[in-house]
Length: 336
Ligand code: KG4
Ligand code: ZN
Image (tube, rainbow, N blue to C red; front, side, top):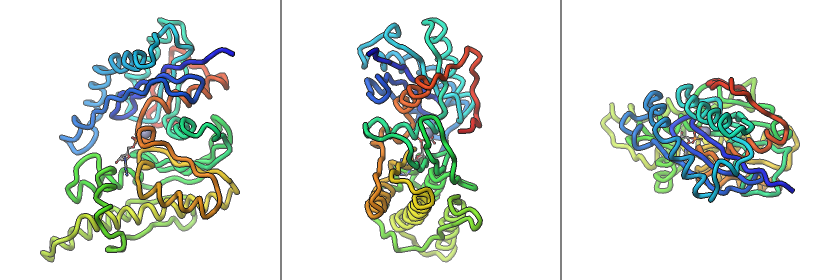
């Protein structure tokens, strides 16, 4: 049986990443060059700076991924690349690079949806996980409850009406002076706080029980801080972090379990940067155990943006016959 080796490239936001994946689920290398230090200065990702950094790093990162896998481009069977959604200038760097390699090496080109990548991260460490299952995708740009009907076949069951979960984490972190990116910092600070200290609202969307809304809880945190400052009373940032995190996690778990019941699934997974959150992992694990369903979650390194997950998704797309031409373009608002 022939081995299939895929070189994958990811550049949709602020990480330049490349990976080599063998037969879909085996990660031979996973190289990530993060721009966090650069964007920290501005409190968030600056799109043009991201693009410029990607173009500078992309070849180095690809070479490092090939070296780590002890392979060359001649060993590859296909090139996978994220072509949306994301920042257009950032995506274009990866797409142009992938097209150049595909052209020069006469390799099939497989464009991948970034969210399909996040979901596919679960296949890496759960060799027996196969569709159908339901996956909660929570990242800086997305909050989706997705029904994975088969490889490459998705149905969106619920989505955020306003802020993404990660975006709420980042904004609250900024408000309490933790800096960018806020998610991991709130996660850490939460451990020193009381999650019951402050009652923040848990927003539900009346006519859409699987949809999310996080702008309310974010505003409630900002109002709480302003209120304290106006009255001249001090507030405990660890309690704010813990109470905010609990409000978000509770809603994520509640809606996820509602979806599990509605669609009678026996397998549930989480994905995306916020899936690295320790509170979410713990609460979701307990909820799935209570329901007696299988729970999958990627290691933190495969939760936040990486190219290994893109390589896994590209493999299943490749098997299904997906091939993109050299006219492949970046699609910033690509639909799943
Ligand atoms: O998936 P990702 O790397 O990029 C996007 O596709 O958006 O997700 C980044 C988001 C950021 O908002 C970051 O604050 C959040 O994931 N994040 C976390 C944690 N680690 C990363 N949020 C909560 N807890 C964490 N441990
Ligand atoms: Zn992402």
